[in-house]
Image (cartoon, rainbow, N blue to C red; front, side, top):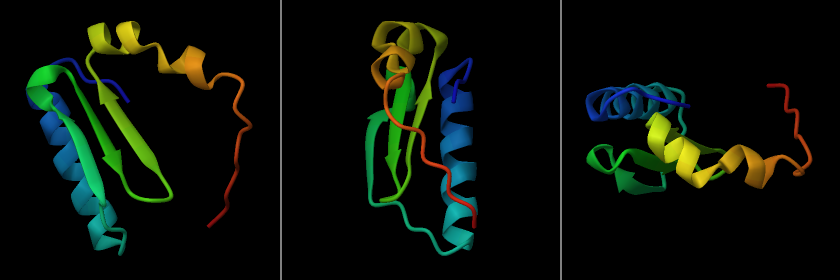
Length: 75
């Protein structure tokens, strides 16, 4: 996901972490900081990247993962 500011990155991280925690999903690891323009959240089965537009362009994860098989999981 993308965010326009470090404050928005922080807010998305907090809201997502709390919502998943409320559903019984615990965050295992966190990398990066809102002030660096990116945060990676590891929830074991799901990895979440939150990027500023500049960091998203720099890391270009869409290109990196474009050939990965899509996994569809119905809960």
